[in-house]
Image (cartoon, rainbow, N blue to C red; front, side, top):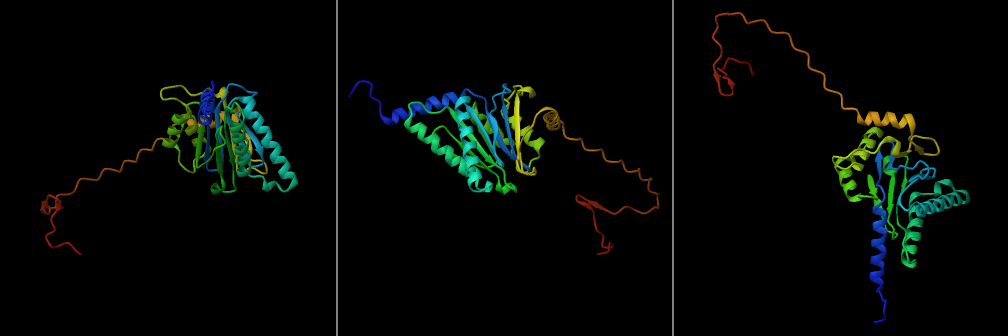
Length: 269
């Protein structure tokens, strides 16, 4: 056997391990559905380098890993969407089409290049109704996963995903969805990311034309306050007025058994 030989299977395993380690060093990103659209939440200390972005009218993008690599993917997706929307119709630009494009490029790079990209990507599209929402997660080797309800990637993704499964439910409000996302991103007993290090955005189906919107400043502060507010306590029931003592009429009370008063046959049916 020639010196330095490695089987194709070993080369692929080494590429995959290298990519997974690089992605795991990043911070997790959570994407989940809520009643009015799709929410993106990511701890991100940088205000200039975004992990969450808009691609087209109804399509959002989130990524973890090497910034320069997933930024190139994002720009390529924007060019693809602009060209297809201009050449045909804006409705022809779909999340599925963009996910297929990314899958093809990621798979080709993983197979042909010496080094695979250290990225994981989510492409999300909001529909007119919740049934029309779509979340596609793409891994470094071009695999595509059609997620339902929520997705997590990067960092301790398995642990974050487990906490999401415990807390997620359908038709949550935006503040409830944000609370679920933050709880999933927080280690048990750990502290939540400070608000100045949170990157939060939505695809809101109720907005006109462009559905993507970043949540920053006072809007984000209000949502965080609403998500952290404890549920309202039930009001105490009003006490019924005390009944006056029964007058002594001299009549004997009805006989009582273990299950209550015994019918002596005089009660009406």
